[in-house]
Length: 205
Image (cartoon, rainbow, N blue to C red):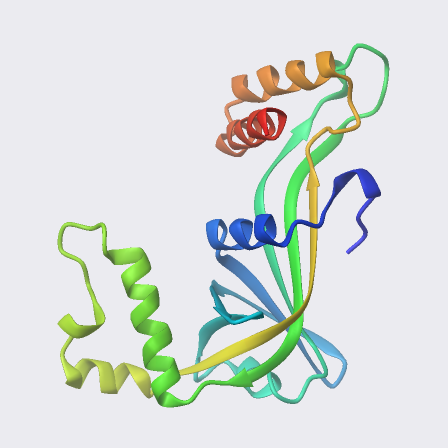
């Protein structure tokens, strides 16, 4: 990913936090030189100093067959993004786009059935535990689970490189920066409002 120095993020803990908060990603592999992509929920797992991205694909999705054959996998995560009008600047300039993005490179491997069950149980716990009637692994019937397990393939990507870009108008002066935040807050687009909040937090950090 092309990242101008001003927008580059290198703090690994910050990057991990971003991935956990924006866990619906895009998995990209290749087959005979052609890219294949699937959009899916993913989990970041840490084992000692090693980081893995785990998930599962439908058995009918041919991408799972490329995970162990392609040289390298790429996962893309994206946060809020928004158009920034240059009319919000003190001096004449051109419009731009603010965004947050993380790329993770690594090698793929398939999960055993037991590892897949653990991955699914963890995902249900994450997304269901706060609900009134949580759908948790141990509350589902063995018959249903066995049936559904036959239709998916679990995988993990051992991360070897993280790249992160936060383009948040860091190249603007303080007055422009605050004005951009105010203007984004007034936009109808909910992503613009989210970007304004990200920029506020960045300024306060």
